[in-house]
Length: 420
Image (cartoon, rainbow, N blue to C red; front, side):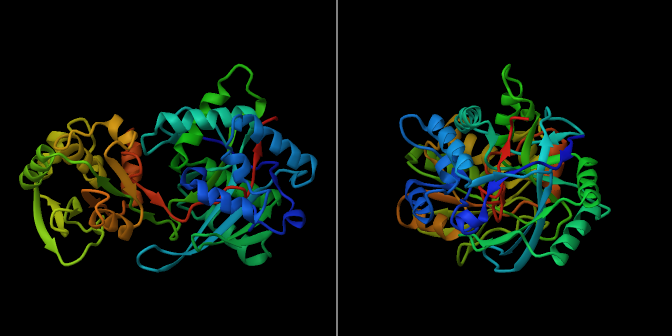
């Protein structure tokens, strides 16, 4: 099993920064140049200066900035190991349902993927892994956590985290730009720490978000001059049973279609799907019991239709080496029958966003088609956590961005130094 342990975190001195609000950021891979500049306007000590460095020598600059912040007391190191309880209150995108998700920050042993240890659930791209590796080498630290899921059927860890949140004032709380109220508690009580870590360590871990960071950590830990602390990495852990754990979809966009591709798309839809016109664009439910469903927005007439896979045998024929759970995955079926087979978009073109794109917001996906930026949009449904777990347990990886775990855990809450 992957070992879950407390850590001596490096974190902001709230008295120096005025709290977390000015210095945290979203994950690096969702930040553009304008947002990076805005974050640094909030504070020159915003974590984005280190986690998303720019310039001629970005990695060296990030390391120098980190060292300077420690020397100046902007960042301080805990004297004793702790875990950090995290509570996020948020409105579900689309429905507005009010939800609470509880987890904790700790460090997790870096393991090879495999049964009983830790599993991925999505394919990754090479470029981000190289960037994160160079940053890790320079800074000698995990600047942001992976997001992993563990099973807590007894509710021991979940109940302990809930008790912590109800009994103590938080170390700090912050409203993030996505509307989530995030609260943190430092937990040093040895009994509570042991109860939470032991419960999580008894479970196989499933990476929900941060595959690139995990694979970077694994490569780094195997390098000849890697520090002793590289055998662990920073992780945010949430129980699979947590009622606030919801998975949202990421929609697919295609553009630059030739006449032949349009013709092949129409043929594939007619061959494999029943098509029902919709009055307005909407996301499929993702788990309606009706089989694989995908909503299709067509730029040629502005229409939206629901594509329902007519026969599961089509998915079985297109995905002969995949599990039944994978063949029920809308992103997997779309990739096999439409993107690969009909449109000729191979994994390399998809990975490099060549004639292909993503949108997490339904309105943005539809607008991209109606405004002429894209030729078509495929609106996906949310994926049940049970299906994600079944696919991972079969040793399979879902297509990139098959899941969107919301809200994100902010970067800058904690840093995990790897020097020990």
